[in-house]
Amino acid sequence: MTSSEIRHREPLDIATARVPRGQVYIIPERCKGCDFCIVFCPVDILVFSTDINAKGYHFPIVAHGKEDACTHCGFCDLLCPELAIYTEDLNALEQEAEGDTD
Amino acid sequence: MTQTVLTGEKKTDTHPVDALLRADRLPHILCPGCGIGTAMHCIVHAMAESGIDRDKHVCVSGIGCSGRVAGYIDVDSYHTTHGRAIPFAVGIAVQNPELAVTVVSGDGDLTAIGGNHLIHAARRNIDLNVICINNFNYGMTGGQAGPTTPLNAQSSTTPYGCWDRPFNLPHLAHAVGAPFVARWTVLHVRQLKDAILRAMQKPGFCFIEVISPCPTNYGKFNNIGSGLEEMESYRRRCVVDHDANLADIEIDLGQEDSPIVVGNFIDVDREPFRPILAGPVREEKPHAAWAGLRKTQFVEDKNGPE
Ligand SMILES: Cc1ncc(C[n+]2csc(CCOP(=O)(O)OP(=O)(O)O)c2C)c(N)n1
Ligand code: SF4
Ligand code: SF4
Ligand code: SF4
Ligand SMILES: [Mg+2]
Image (cartoon, rainbow over all chains, first blue to last red; front, side, top):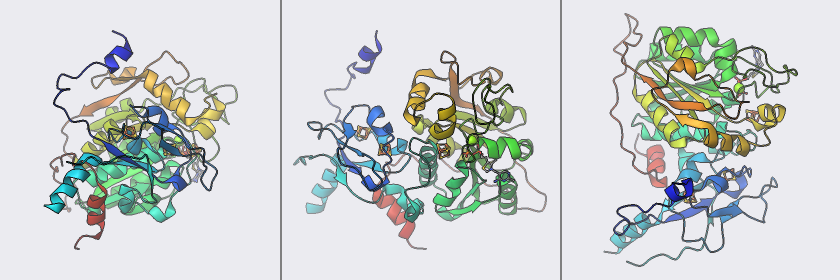
């Protein structure tokens, strides 16, 4: 089995599992453009902005067409040395919001 | 249920763990691609998850880039003199056994000038969590070689390559009696955070080596172009082996085909140091389940009723 096959194997509970959806937050002024979050995002949704922050660094943004692809795995968050990126669990937020209106 | 339509990233100016940081001092002084910020991030998450009151956490650093960490974490923290983080921490831990005292410092600070304190605090099994950020050189002062600089590595003081054998830190810590010994890299953020959490809950001397990139100095002298490049080498080379024979896990950073062995190697029971006149040692805390860290949780922690 190649490593890409291993990476793309189908989980047994794929029909019933609900994949979390993440909202990505960026703090542009903290980013130093180290590239960690972009390279190590398991679903590869981040790219560098064309904009720069006050220190001249390009910071990550969500790639065009991948707005719905963040799984809220939290890896970019914990990996960022600058505490410049995090995500929130959208499913949980939506559920909370539903609960509020009841 | 209505599904929110996502439109991409949102920009903001605060992070959920800011409540445990002196966020007004961010961005910190560390270089782009330096791993110390990631180690600090893992420590802060572990503190938040530990179930130990913020008032009962103490963070002690020596001098060096790694030593800056105590200055950013907003618990009672001490930025001490070079090499003396452990003696300060021993005083705190022995005087007040209720505190969870975490020492965060560099390989130079803890194993060169501070090496004697390290071995004796471990031998006496003082209740400390010692997190040694190993970037294989003295980062802050310009990339001099130290006790962890790999054989043959270049540094500002070894232009013909380092001819001294480096410390194998987990092996050293185990040999002098530390009941918890782990090694992770800053790419292993979850495992690192969990190891720190375990150390915070376990009484006694817990030692964690954290392998971390220093692109500005170690990288520059050894042809490693960026922090990212070093992180990618951890991904290629690290082997998790909790049962490794510690004598065999010396790191040969320059040798691409030699593995970097990581894991939680030692976790045994040993009676912690307890001076006759002091109160009982800190009890082992139950493991707070991963609660999914959320902004509100931290803000409540910080501003909650006294
Ligand atoms: C008594 C004393 N000796 C030497 C120094 C100079 N000095 C400052 S930091 C440092 C070494 C830092 O190396 P390390 O602990 O590995 O931290 P890093 O910067 O690599 O994170 C040295 C030698 C000092 N500040 N005080
Ligand atoms: S949370 Fe995970 S999936 Fe989402 S952007 Fe970060 S690394 Fe990628
Ligand atoms: S990991 Fe952090 S500092 Fe590095 S590029 Fe991503 S947001 Fe910027
Ligand atoms: S000199 Fe090295 S250790 Fe110090 S901040 Fe820069 S990259 Fe990090
Ligand atoms: Mg160092």
